[in-house]
Image (tube, rainbow, N blue to C red; front, top):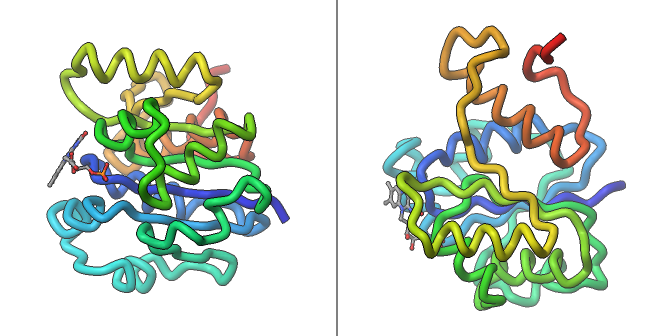
Length: 189
Ligand SMILES: Cc1cc2nc3c(=O)[nH]c(=O)nc-3n(C[C@H](O)[C@H](O)[C@H](O)COP(=O)(O)O)c2cc1C
């Protein structure tokens, strides 16, 4: 079974990460890690206090493991575990900067560093507005390491009627980047 890591960091748009998780196909073994600060955004934006509450709300399948960001010895911290793909949705500027500098002081940034060193697909969805030169430089640096930089940028060409459809469009675009089959948005014909 393919091993997929989903990181959720403390940028706005936690719901995008949660809906991405909910839409992942069942044939993946999924590992989820929230940054400490993502839990604060979770409270602000989703009015959910704990990851336990998230699990109940999403009604998830069995092949999803939630890992503790402080557990630097967890399986996904090692290249030998062999994770196949990783995404961080949303990616805060802090997490982006840490990954760009090779800082691996928590499970989330360590797992991302491992994906880069092992040359495996890593998708980042940086969320900030406007973007500073520092953030843009970090993105360019990571793009040159073959990281997929895919911010949540709106698209209006897929006959979108509401926010949920816009979120499906974004999640579908991220699935496209990671070669995960889906029918989340109507493709241009
Ligand atoms: C409600 C809320 C929304 C936030 N939105 C963003 C954001 O969109 N982008 C960002 O880079 N930081 C945002 N932040 C700030 C980050 O949470 C903060 O920089 C934090 O240190 C990121 O930590 P992490 O990268 O470990 O998750 C937000 C914070 C809060 C409380």
